[in-house]
Image 1: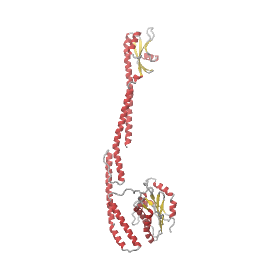
Image 2: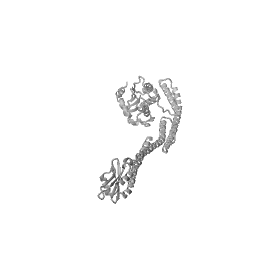
Image 3: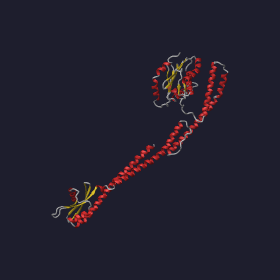
Image 4: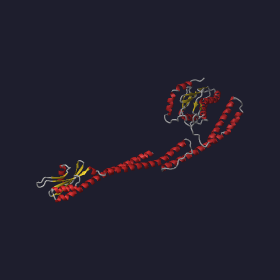
Amino acid sequence: MRWALVKVCLAVTTMVVVAFAVPLGLVIKEMARDRAFSNAEREAAVVVPALSITTDRDQLERVVAAAGSDDGMAVHLPANGGQPALDLGRQRATAADIAAVRELGRASTAEVPGGSALLQPVALSLGTVIVEVYVPESEVSNGVGTAWAVLAAVGAALVVGSVAVADRLGVRMVQPARRLVEGAHELGEGKLGSRVPEEGPSELRLAAVAFNSMADQVVQLLANERELAADLSHRLRTPLTVLRLNAASLGDSPAAEQTRAAVAQLEGEVDTIIRTAREAKPQTAAAGPGAGCDAAEVLRERMAFWSALAEDEGRKVRVAGADRPVRIPVVRADLVAALDALLGNVFRHTPEGTAFAVDLHNGEDAVIVLVSDAGPGIPDPQAALARGRGSGSAGSTGLGLDIVRRLAESTGGDVRIGSSVLGGTEVRIWIQLDGREPERRGHRGAVRRRRQGRRTITFNRSRSLP
């Protein structure tokens, strides 16, 4: 905006200076020419009284020599009474120009080497006498160069001054806009205390007022959301306490131990939600260097948890690729939530006895997690990925796959739903390893191209169950 304003002011001032300076320079040049020829006419008028008194050659030569300096004047007498035509002084105009002026009877100018000549006719008894006054070019342009230089300096000063004023005005307009942009970036980074000074032009002041009001509303909404989350989580403590007491009375069977472990994990998650909700600032910062978890270790742990339920329901389970460490830039709790959401969907939306498989593939720039089942499949994969749109069955919130999608997109990857080689649904999580930000345009196409080289390996791992 600043440079645009400077350019506009520069263009407008330049056009104004040119529009006024060029005509004024031409007028000055014409005035200098008129001044030079006016002086020449006055010199010619000095000779006229002498011509009306005498026609003696010697006297006229003295008059011409006294009136004209540096051979600047000449007098052309016509032939009279048998006397030939007489030319006194240095003649510069041609005979044709002199004859034309004598015939027309009015003053005229003629171009001669080094300048111009004023031909002034004087009617006497002996005929029309032509007085020639030489006007050099230096006299015609005397002072014109200086005047033009002054005009150019004034014009340049006007342009520089207008640019300086426009630059100051641009700074006055741009600084509030920059502060508004910086405030928006800080608010987007989670700095909820960021506010913008309400100064500058009226439009930017109104924008700053609207931004500050929006920031206050965001803070209030987040505070309300944290309080609501803390309140709802706190309400879960009572039924969790009952579950923990009931689990304690189940005995020492493996199912009882798993139930107690699940209740303890749920209590821990509730406590984490309450602590996070009570914090003054939301956790919006990205994970630092070295943050993440071992996807293979998390996968083995969650499959050990779900395998007991799979055994009770008669489901065949296969896990592949989790035999060696696979580091990913994802928080462990987020990966656990995503895997539980996918595996929970398998148990919730497929009949008992339906086989499923989980494959972990570690590539050079990405990690792929495949969850496949032999169930009926998902009729509308796009709708399944939409936030809040569940399957319509009891207990479905529609947020499970959205949790998985957000986890993948936080690393620059994505989630795709397709047909499994087992005959049911295949959910593929692409986790980017290079730490790039998620791309908004063309990202899926790039991921698809990077994935084509690994598709055969991934599918071959899912073809059969033990």
